[in-house]
Amino acid sequence: MLSDFISYWNNFPKHRARVLAPSHLEELPEITNNCREIIARGNGRSYGDASLNDVIISTLKLKDPFIIDEENGVMVAGSGLLISEVLDFLIPKGYFLPVVPGTKYITLGGAVAADIHGKNHYHSSSLGAYILSLDVFDGEKVVTCNKDHHSKLFYETIGGMGLTGIILKVSIVLLKISSAFFNVTSNKTTNFSVLLESFEKNKNLGYQAAWLDIASHKSGKINAIYTYGNFANLEELDVNKMAESFTKSKEGHWSIPMVMPNFTLNKWLLKVFNFAYFYLHQPKSRIVHLKKFLFPLDGIKNWNRLYGSNGFLQYQFVIPTARFAETVELIFSEINKSKEKVYLAVLKRLGPTHNNAVMSFPLDGYTLALDFKKTKEVFILMDRLDVMVVNAGGRIYLAKDARMSAEIFSKSYLKTVSKNPKFASLLSKRLGLN
Ligand SMILES: Cc1cc2nc3c(=O)[nH]c(=O)nc-3n(C[C@H](O)[C@H](O)[C@H](O)COP(=O)(O)OP(=O)(O)OC[C@H]3O[C@@H](n4cnc5c(N)ncnc54)[C@H](O)[C@@H]3O)c2cc1C
Image (cartoon, rainbow, N blue to C red; front, side, top):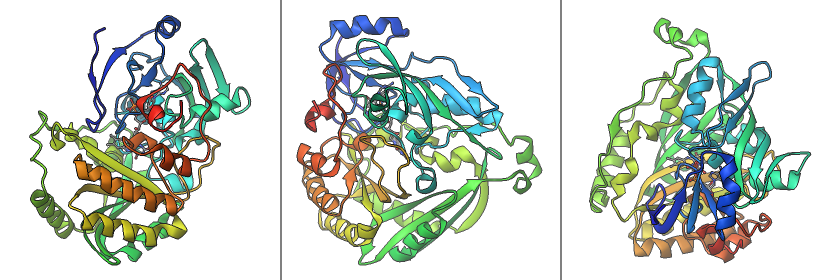
């Protein structure tokens, strides 16, 4: 196949690469022998260069059928399946994945490689805590690994960003659910301490997140909408919803039809949107389909096109709880002193990670994801934020990173995966992992 420019969800960076899409694992040894280096690509929903290299192996055709052991709540599935496909299979059976990210359009392999976290991380940990075993192609052969056999490979592959090999099959413990609906409550505040109190009050149960308007920040004050939800019991559903209590839900059909001009999103539009979103929001409790609550951004297809052809950057960091409030005040002030604008900001509470994944992102603390347009100046701003994050004992999420330095990485990720010369990405080279 010819080389083409490939990028990820945020359209930066773009790299000329050959993408090979094997449909049988028998094809992998030959591909590997013919290439100096390769890296797996799932559905390209990371924000950066984690799966960019000259030769990329797309896993989207590696869709081994699902095997589900309903009695024990365990599923075995191919790594190229999308979370959306997995959920459409599981929900009607009354099962769910114990950890899901903010979009259902990622692959199972990409989810394991990033050791994804969800809005329930504080009490439910990251996906790695539920993996029973993995089949991994290490460049020569397929190895089945778990916590007892080939455990080094197992814990380096979970959160290993594709650097140990290609995940082919995943065996995972499922979550039994009471319905496909969520009971959701939202409220708004202008007081940051009050917002953090809500997170602390609800951290042991359910799913929670907050939207923030960073430009509204003034020492301790910020416009925020906090949302908390959990699976609804059948008694909480009305008759209509009960009839469809384990259904898939209809998708939203909004779509951004093309890459918009780079000026489409601008500070005036942002100001009006944030003002209206905050002031028109009515605090309320409601029952909604789980997909509306857990994957709200999926309601608008291709929303990344709003940022134009220049693309955008997401800056996602975690800071331990004890240092979070003071550090984030400095971070908000630093951003607002600059000319850069945050187009979307989402705050989540993370807890301890209950698996031994070597390069996993979560720490017991708060994680904030900030979307910026890609400008020359934003890189300089992010370099300054990196120092604040690392000095507070925090770190940057690799699945969202396109620009961190090797020095910042080595100060914040104290353990790294073993080198496998066959697997490398622009990210691994930038961070000094190869
Ligand atoms: C709107 C949105 C919301 C998000 N919300 C969250 C969130 O709440 N929590 C969270 O944790 N993440 C979140 N993410 C990030 C996303 O979950 C991760 O980037 C995930 O890894 C993307 O999976 P993918 O299949 O698209 O993989 P890609 O983006 O293609 O690849 C990501 C990494 O996984 C590796 N990889 C992919 N497949 C395999 C395989 N089969 N074997 C070995 N390595 C593989 C790649 O080499 C690369 O390093 C979000 C992303 C978006 C776009």
